[in-house]
Length: 387
Image (cartoon, rainbow, N blue to C red; front, side, top):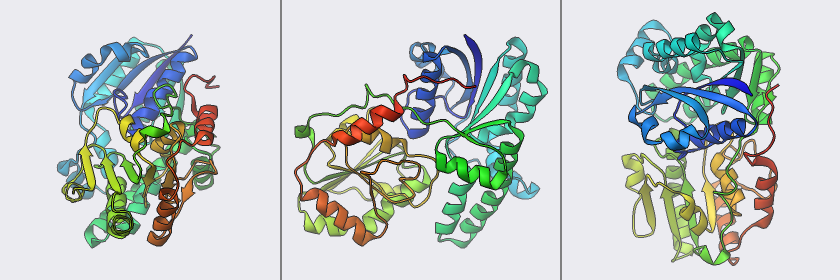
């Protein structure tokens, strides 16, 4: 048994979004392979760890949470960052409460490995370095190349001031992320593509730690459960790339699909839809907001769409869709890091419509090859040794 400390930005349970799904199944995989893991993380509500104590205790030896909703914006932190020439996101994730709790955990425990999850939590590397005898070997696991997301958002931003702020943040966070990669001796990206980018930019060797999914939870349903002429877009709609993507699709592709297929329906599934996304709702466009279980929407869709123009890492929703035998249409950005040849990857509205038309002209079916690909690559119960 190896004792490990996981330093994570979010409480990984319930696993309702891609980041939490990735974190939760990595933690389960570690437990499956004999790691005794203690967790320290932010939580939007301190009571969440108690609410889900039964589920969390199956995976973690102990759970320490610091109350802070990292998905909301903090104007005072932005003002401070602008006035001091520092990164807003580093200011947002660096809190006195978290540092104090981390020190307490390290003082009262000794770990053989500390796994830092995400570049955001790299702000606590100085504490871990200071208490290195207690923290043990440090591993940095990156779900995305975070500065790449910011650079892409800046390139797409229409408002001049907002674009300038994003460019500033991308530059500052790039400096932080690459410096962090150089300082930590063991860095694991989530895809080979991300590893190559980070290695090229930092000059440091980068490993790969694939994502994991639950193949019992995400398994194919019968073809007769599929709703003909249905499209589904799933994701946290409060995340800017998801919001931008579905707005692009509904502006440039959906009107043509709706005219060509009078019974077609679009399901926009995910928490925190902003006003612009809620306004998409109509008789044929369903905007659900938060759902406790997205699997029924996966099952019913004839085609999962991933219209992302910005992003990095890997889309967990694509992996879960493949595990469920679904057809997937994505942009190249959305499909990055996934080498399944059956993905439909298109860029222009014309290409997207043509791809949807081809799928809708075929009877709904389960893609068994996609499910087999996911089973072979991403089962959380596989062997994992962090050596």
